[in-house]
Image (cartoon, rainbow, N blue to C red):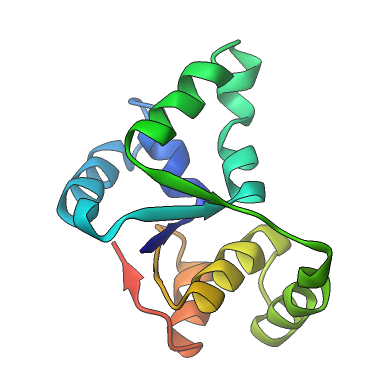
Length: 127
C-alpha cells in the first residue's frame, strides 16, 4: 500500500493544482500497490470540495481509486506525539508519516518538509 499525503489527494481532486498531472501519473503507475490515507488526511483534502458543495463527489472519486481510509484511534495519541516530536513535523504530516510507518507502506507526497523526515525514518517516498 502507498499512503497518500493530503497534497497528493488535493492535487488528484483539483485539476488546476500544480501537481495534478504528476499525481495522476503516480496513481496510474502505483495502482497495483493500493492506496491508503488517514481519516484526518482525507478530511484535510475534502475542505475545498466541501466549500464548493462537492464533498460527496470528491469522496466518491477517492473511493473510485481505492483509497482505504485509515482510522485514528485513542491509542494513537502517544505514537502521533512521538512522531511529531522526533521528526519535528506539523501534526498533519505526523499523521501521514505515522500511517506509513505503522502500515509499513511507502508514502506519496510532494512536500519536502515531510519527505526528508520520512526517508530518515526508513519510509520509501513515492513521487
